[in-house]
Image (cartoon, rainbow, N blue to C red; front, side, top):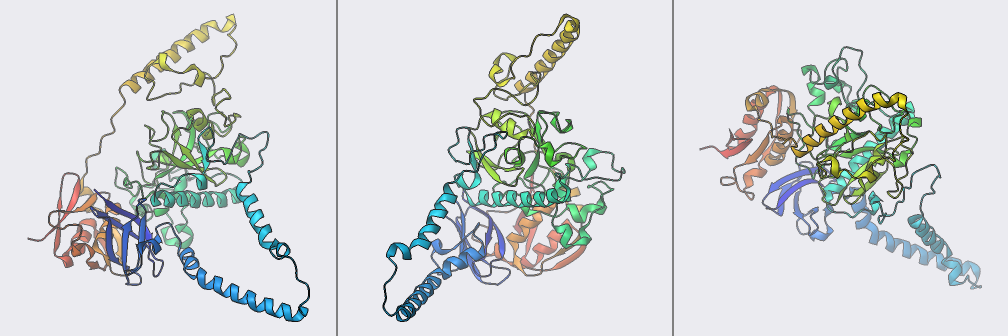
Length: 544
């Protein structure tokens, strides 16, 4: 079934809009900003294209095309004609002033354009110089290790392009923090000691929220739990810059607006609690701050953040805002890392660049990118793993101790002397027992169950303020409300089909201090609609 969902720009006023249509490949909506009618459809490549009625779809605005790009494209023919006319006039004046004298040869006349073209080719083809102490970071999309710059990666959908932009925006925010503090933001926002539990601490994503600089009334109570009702106005907001339009899971199991981005904590279950100088440690750790000098592998070689498709949590939840690489396969595997693409995922590096890791990337390369001080190159032919030989590299595909690939482990160290035989024997027994326990977990991996939904609790929560400045289509408002409530909202397909005009019924009102139940009822009343509770969602139906 076709799904028409995602963000796009109004071709008339440039307003950023969102659509969520099921069972349709095209739709007509009215822009809530300028009021003009817009046609939105899926292109052959799966991208959203928005255009005005009467325009050819190919001339519409792509979901990832800024308005200034469209204007530049539309006005380019006029601009080019003006340049040609101006050139002819200036050439005539020069001819008269020179008295018909000798001219430069065509090669001389064309030399500036030729130099620019050659310079552009050099920039496009040039590789960044590599330092001998740094890992191999080739920007070629055909890298043998499966690593490529984001601009060289194959584009698969407009949603992924939006997500890449979100990663880059986050990288810019981290860069601003890094330039001011000479360190990366701590995984858990500092508190004055009144918040003892890690689960109650604010995340690094909350500390970097750009909205805090624009609206000081959003400033949370950092000394309280992020779940405290006094912080609801801050944490209940949906932050589009932390979401991936390709992933529908954008609400946490406890019904908070979620993040599809997490920080990288390193390699192994215990990585978040390792000191900064440990070879398995990543940039984000518990109760430590990572300085720029701690990233000895190089900022361009170390992973800062990546997308997730599962196990999402509130963007304000500090304990869930970072995670290590534990189980293979790392991309679209049990750890939950991914971007909705089958062939790989983009990742944000510590220098602010975005790279694309395809699914064929060697696991050892991903582990080395996740570790910030392992002193190992990004070359799979070079043996070695971040950390000591006692690290168990878990794999969902390798379910027994016999199947663990010895090539993925560090080279054996020299045998212990006689004075340490007893201690080493105890340690070996402990490691063997731990390994068997880990393998037992892999043979029977836990099944992630969909949490039961407490509709009464979800709909009873209070909204301090809900305001629609401009009337907007009902279905668009319901999409936003769905994210706020944390429960899926669908139209009854038998009563209200995809082409039913009631979906685009304009609604606009302002409410304060009301429950979601009251808000939903008031929203549906002008359209003569009602809602019913289904097994796992809210269904919108017509009043009988």
